[in-house]
Length: 214
Image (cartoon, rainbow, N blue to C red; front, side, top):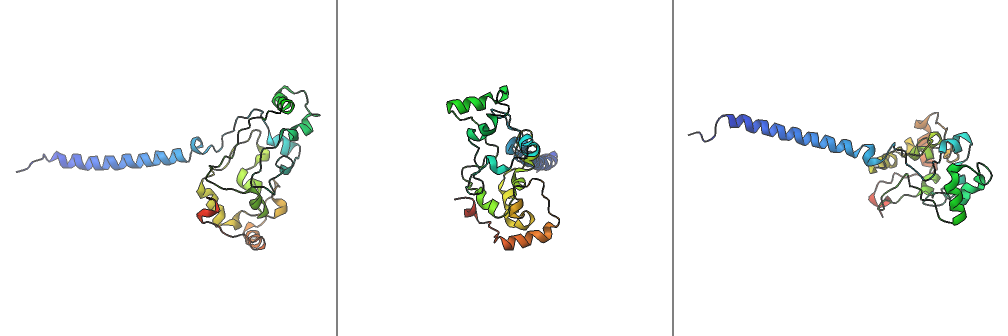
């Protein structure tokens, strides 16, 4: 005696296929969102209290990264420059610009500007700028072509897989130390130069968890 109608075989097979399709579509949607600018903030220009242009200051005026980020070679954090750094120029240049009124007010009152950090790593991630500079990792490698940014944005995802790509294959990314802050430098032959610098600078392929999670 047949309990279920024959059509149930078709319905059950269709249901299994439908569920599989829905699961695949859900996974694809989740991956798309995970890698989107919405989740990573990559390629999104950040609104700041003053629209600071790296393109104008770096590419246009030729100001070195270290003039504003003075501790990048010696400290774990590059730090946002103090307002006194801004005023060292803008007390003389564009001193009456309405756009720079928040800068002048901050300098006069002592209240810091509320800059929004563009590259904001989670609290459980340890990153040291100074060691990367010493090992020949250029600003462009992580921050992108900031000298061409009228407003600053994050170029890379900052996901762990991105960090590990460099840690596993440092020879693909390192450059001479004297070129770390050079925005226009390009290697003639990275395949030859990279392994040489890895050996010369004593770079190790550090991929254990405790390297970045402490």
